[in-house]
Image 1 (cartoon, rainbow over the protein chains, first blue to last red):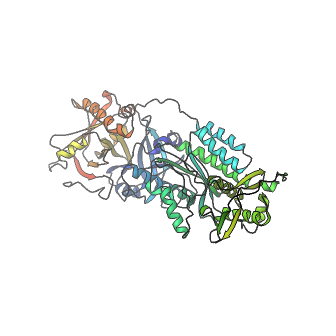
Image 2: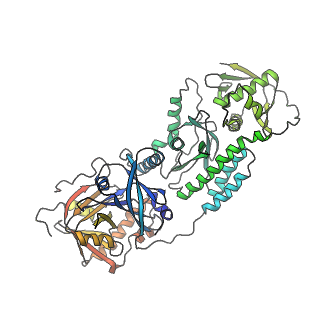
Amino acid sequence: MVRLESIRDCLEGVVPGNIATCAPDGTPNVAYLSQVQFVDSEHVALSYQFFNTTRRNILASPYARVSVIDPHTAAHYRLSLQYLRTEDSGPLFETMKVRLAGIASHTGMSGVFRLLGSDIYRVLDIERVPGETVVLPPAHRNRLSSLRACSEMLCGAADLEGLLSRLLAGLARHFDIEHAMVLMLDEGGGHLYTVASRGYPSSGVGSEIALGDGIIGVAARERTPIRIGHFAAEYSYGRAIRSGLEQSGVSGIETEIPLPGLPASCSQLAVPIMACHTLVGMLYVESAQELRFGYDDEDALVALAGQLGAGLRVLQHTHEGGEDVAEPQPSPPPARGRAVTVRHYAENDSVFLDGDYLIKGVAGSIFLALVRDYVDKGQTDFSNRELRLDPRIRLPEISDNLEARLILLARRLVERAAPVQIEKTGRGRFRLRVQRPLSLVQA
Amino acid sequence: MPSSLPPILDLAHAEFISGAVSINAASCRPGGFPALARGLGCRVAEDCNSVNVIFGVKAAADVLDGVRRSGALSVVFSEPSTHRTLQLKGEDALVLRLEPGDADRVARYRDAFVAVLAPYGHTEEMVRALLACPADDLVMVRFTPTSAFSQTPGPHAGEPLAGAR
């Protein structure tokens, strides 16, 4: 028997599939299928969009025949299926809903297609239909060797920043994926913030997206990878971020950092970064090319995200294994020139430098603590450990994401060309480089 | 068995289903198990009463077996560019040999379908392979449509065609 996982390319819906069913009186029916979703080696899911003859027939007799065609080779297969159940919520349903939205907008069917349920079928048999096929040249990339090479790069990372930059470099070098971003789950759990990106005109570091918004937010909420091959307007994150922030009630203060993204994004893949059943963040990749990511890419990136999740967890806790002893540093040059106003808004810990928005939330309170210690005591050298114990910052006890927040803060300061910069001075240690006097104002 | 009632199809329908449309047919196997196959061309009788759909014998073996046992056949015709879709059902289907000119019809259908799918990125090689069949492996199924439904996706999907009985 042909195995389902070996014909997954036929399930991308490039050539529409068909489903045949029989009424109790023996009248056959054939209909087009929007989606045949691979579930596992023994199950597929079909989209249930309308109550029609197919649906009536399947409820009366659970057997169906489905044909699928490889869009590149023309290899033609027929699946014998047995209907098991319908799901109308959960990860599979949400995945199919997002994918259907992509298919609908690609085929000019937006507004017509609405997913009522995901029908789960057991695959009883797969038959190869006799016929000619096209011989293809060997694949450009072997996903397993790409995964191995990328995985080895991740293993070489000594800290969180290194891990993130190795990941983005590895995706580009070994998977030809040029547009990618990593988002971390906020401690409160309600949204994700961008901590690293590659391939965009602006990095978007610090931008946020709410759980449930856009393809990234839906994939995060459902803890499931979602991959679409055609642009779906209703899952565009550009739109999602605005609505997400409006709901979060940031009032009167312009603190929105635009999420990066390709203006003409056609293929998108959002993969949850999990560590021991816990969502840590999201890996998101995209391309202007349609159908750029296949099932194999999804598998590889899910595996990589697993390693990333474990790596993030381990490296976040390296402080427990000690940190570098503070080495004597030459005294920094004194700050000169006009004072920069550092304005802090307590309601959301947002910080503005001379009226320009810098950062908010936990990263904002970290920055405030650093600036206060600098202004009050002239302190420029800090350790992660003291920040962790600092009651002003209010870090959660478990999974505090301090390192991720520091990366975020350091990158924002670089991007804003701020007269204050954060410079690593060793493992778990850093120094504040202040070029101009700071004037702290509590709003 | 030819029907004495007026045909369901008009000339416009006949032209549509004989054109460069995707053709898929189903029959029913003993035990209520469906069979499914792809059509390789279609010809409508001049009086619009009967429809002839051409298949490859090997690729459509199950459908042909179902037709021989029950005579029941459903065929769906869909235009890739517009998604306009029509389903015909009959109860008197017969498996027959091709008639003169039908093999050429299959070749013309293949050429037309290649042209229709080209803008969607499907290569000529792929479409030709999908519809390839040796001339001596072709067979025809003739039936009288007794019901016809629009299956164009949308609110009217599944509605009987005007004049359908």
